[in-house]
Image 1 (cartoon, helix red, strand yellow):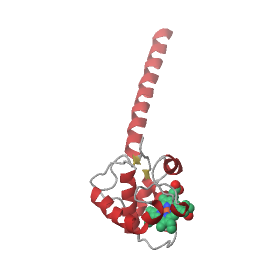
Image 2 (image 1 turned 30 degrees about the vertical axis):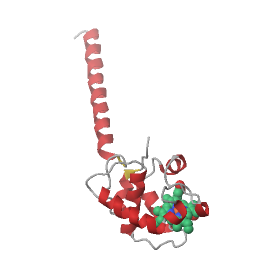
Image 3 (image 1 turned 135 degrees about the horizontal axis):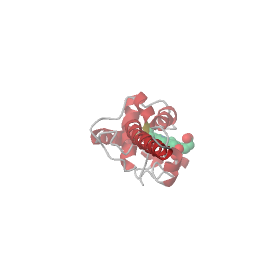
Image 4 (image 1 turned 120 degrees about the vertical axis):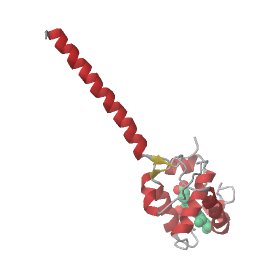
Amino acid sequence: MDARNHLFVIVCGSLVALASAAVFAQVATKDHTTTTRDGVYTSAQAASGKVIYSKTCTVCHLDSLAGGVNEAPALKGKQFLSDWEGKPLRSLFGRIISTMPSDDPGSLSEQETLDVLAFLLEENTCPSGKKPLGPPDALDKIQFVGAK
Ligand code: HEC
């Protein structure tokens, strides 16, 4: 084999290696990053979350989720997204279960918090799916991505 042929073989070999690395990377991302755009709660769950929300959150955050009473911030829209976008859903779950409702923190069970969170996702235009949200540990692997 002369030098030119040799070079040709090396170049082709590297191209094949690069191409397969790219394909592998794509498959890997697809498999491992679940986001809230992937249907991570059911609409039945969001409906029971809405009932809990009306009883325990509306007084400060309002039915519209716009907030404003007792200095409660909005739970959807620009500011809310900039606080939570790209973070694991577990951190939002943790924020709610340990600090909300701010007049009675700790009063929600894990299941109630999951349901309220499903309602918040629905209000942030994340699509529903076939499997209910939970258990809390599973939320480590779901990234929050709100309305675009
Ligand atoms: C008594 C008023 C009050 C009630 C009731 C209340 N909140 Fe809040 N909430 C606040 C205030 C004030 C803040 C911001 C300061 C703080 O964290 O205490 C807040 C912050 C939040 C945040 C963080 C928002 C952000 O952008 O970081 C979330 C999420 C939240 N509340 C969810 C809820 C949910 C869900 C409920 C019902 C289970 C609820 N809150 C009930 C007053 C309230």
